[in-house]
Image (tube, rainbow, N blue to C red; front, side, top):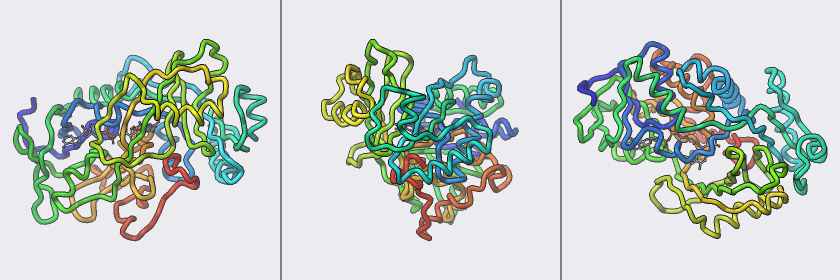
Length: 396
Ligand SMILES: Cc1cc2nc3c(=O)[nH]c(=O)nc-3n(C[C@H](O)[C@H](O)[C@H](O)COP(=O)(O)OP(=O)(O)OC[C@H]3O[C@@H](n4cnc5c(N)ncnc54)[C@H](O)[C@@H]3O)c2cc1C
């Protein structure tokens, strides 16, 4: 346990976001840092992430961050953290939509090609002929195909980021809930815990769905709604040829990906709003309504998966902003509070960029590599929206 009480930075929350910020600060030589979590590191919503790592974002700045992060996961993560194995599994990911989505898809694919990334735009029938034949293309006319995308391993990334940060001198305090924030005038002057009060120059909000529990009492509530996401795990049928690659279906409103060689997971592109505590969890006997809700559209698109059997259901929660994009940067009401929150169900893949951005904000007062000026909390006071070009904000 730490004996210190004063730091340059306190990172509140040790999920994919907080751990990446700690790693990036440490890489940049900034180590008088405390990371604090009420539970074990990575045991928040990160633990239930479907962890798709992909590039397809219609927002230019988020796409810049997706490209940076995609390359980081694939090319830099192992070397830079010292992790013994790759956390990336390639599955290929297709984004399929109706004709209305074509213009946005063309725009994104053209931009990714310009960056020398292997991506392709197919008419749906052509995709069926040349990439994956076990598909029913009803309702889709275009597929943006990312053959080099896939998914990551959330637990390993959190442990590796924090492992590196610890080695450099960053302190990590788990199982220590922050009970309250102490605010004087317009600054936070400490966090109250059962192990005492800890103080810092800067406080970073990487609290995900729990942010408002601490922010509301100090009058700094955020426009975040908490949405429930249920992910169905299916045991793959014996015929592995029919198992589809990663998929996001803008027509039928679901996403899916293989999980290793034996399972497939299927989630929804929206979220549900129910008044229950946002604790991530699992049903080992999958509820029938969830099985039906997830498998109906999925097997409609991929009829070969009708023989897949339900295995389990994970539940997790999204911290959703009005435009389904993150809140990044200083809070205009509390001068030493920096937000990296409101990740709206698509924040795992972007963790490397988020860590780079927030560490620069701490060190230089602004992000050096990405223009995140449009993602401050203040945008909501001006009713500016950064919503995806698609109806599903989670696609970005
Ligand atoms: C089911 C599901 C599927 C998803 N799929 C994808 C995907 O495919 N691709 C993708 O990019 N993203 C995906 N996401 C989103 C992504 O996983 C999240 O945006 C991201 O992992 C959130 O990380 P975080 O660190 O911000 O939050 P969390 O992991 O929730 O971390 C917040 C931390 O704060 C701690 N905390 C809270 N209150 C306190 C307190 N009072 N004191 C101390 N600590 C506290 C918590 O214990 C927690 O560890 C998915 C999310 C879910 C739920």
